[in-house]
Length: 240
Image (cartoon, rainbow, N blue to C red; front, side, top):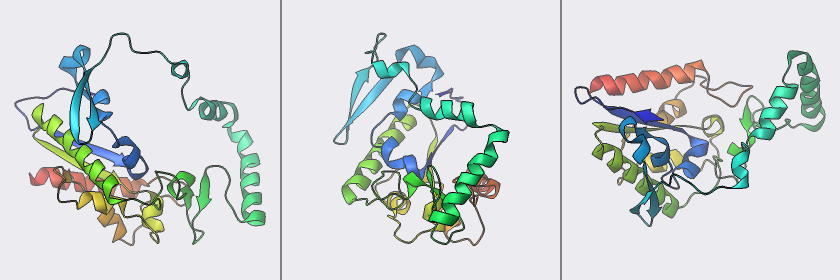
């Protein structure tokens, strides 16, 4: 994405990320390759994170070519959607799902059923071996690395002219609806005293509320959850 700062206005950057992407996306500084000032599109500078330091690496006009660049990594998923995601086929999928649920007590495809049987969770958010999981172990070194990466991002965008930089993590549905065994990733990052970014904390709001913020039969937050986040963002920004 691109941005253009207006020196006559208050320029604010809000970085929002889903919890299942937090550890992988902020393992490095790929954000610098994806979010640019419109005035430097042809002079893009990327950075490589090395033990807390940033080393400039200038982009090439002729980047290296890999065979994998020819194909979208989601091509199989997209083809499956285009070929089979028609209304007249849905009863067949629903019958298969019902068979798996009632005979084998499990969900189909990439989802799993919550312990209380009321929600569907994306499988990668509950498998302990997956980096996007709410239950995958997190150690202090990884938290420190994430915080250092976020601080490098903060320093960069403050330097280019943003008045404020906010950070907000949207919890996995499993984090809120099935918190037993949660690895505490979001609060560990948010309360770290070294973190420079201001926090838009939706985790604590969801965690301490009895309202439903996620779809029961889907892995995403619902309209109520999205609106709550928007309300909190507006309150933060208006307060300034």
